Figure 1 (cartoon, helix red, strand yellow):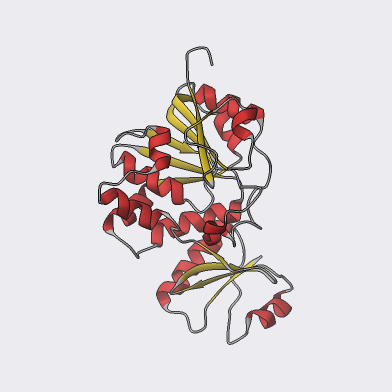
Figure 2 (cartoon, helix red, strand yellow; figure 1 turned 90 degrees about the vertical axis):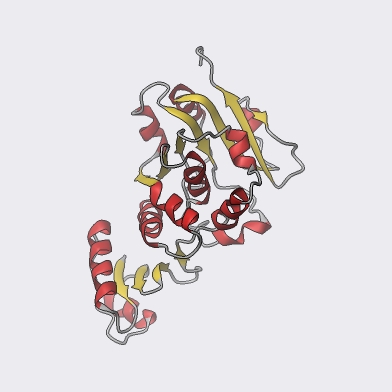
Length: 261
């Protein structure tokens, strides 16, 4: 993997590229006026991170470009500002000041909504096992500037950790997070979720493991919540209670935490 810029980059873009290359630990290859295909031939690599005034994207042959965007978080926060409810927040029983651990960050849309709901007194940490995804989402959360002030501020409050969620959970003290949340990659894609199509080839496809859920139940103070597609059986496998009926495309389920977990 290499990093380059768009054509004729500004000084600001060059500084951004240098900082990101250092964070990734990969070389910057001058773009000159080469096409990406020519740059691949010249550098001998397929995957190229391109930094431009429009943002950062990962270009891979035969795949959609991957880049950060807030996805559903933008309109969900607009609805919350109007006084509407959000099913995820209701399933998690989120309150201002809560500490939320999103153990499957992905593009971060759910983490952004959590950050809006917990407010400045709360904390949201997102765990992403795929390092490339984690670093690009972290960069996007810090630099995205389109949308409402509420959306921007929520994005800035999300903390990103590039780690395996099982390893991270094992390091957490008992009852250290109000809510632990899982949104594993759906085995069957949801049509309405075309915004994450570019993420799917990069995402961790491993099934959610029993030992991970057990650690989450140890770490959570109130609830562990699971988001899955309507054909998934995770909720039954782990003894979770569905929050709403299975005819919906997306189903939330939960387990209350008790002293005996």
